[in-house]
Length: 188
Image (cartoon, rainbow, N blue to C red; front, side):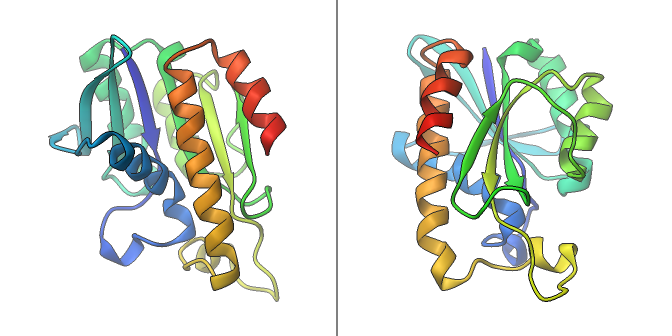
């Protein structure tokens, strides 16, 4: 069983913010397959589906970003999902808006959602899709920036990167992750 997690914050106030780009990618996967987040457990909402003969979970933690690991770890334990079958999608300040990068492991890079996952999973060795949101300009605080909405100019770039992330997740369900990384890191 594979688990695809999008990081974000619950609630309408956060729905279109930069920090919720992980949720946007999960929503894209749900929409293109006609699936729904119809299950709730461990302070998360998720879909349990079948795809290419394998069971998958698409998860949006409802713990708020900084506590994401509190949802992800118990769900993985409950469904007995090995760490190598987990992939997480999240926003990255260090990538320009619209770019994506896939990695097999790494540190938290200052991202509190990833920090929480590392703390709760006890490892940095999980697959990631980082979606670029760029850095704030003009002295804006990072917290205000990530909780702000995308500009009109950024919206098209973000839409394309969300679709590309969903395509990468589809590929992850069909072939080894190193091949997926080669394919999608080249496109970005």
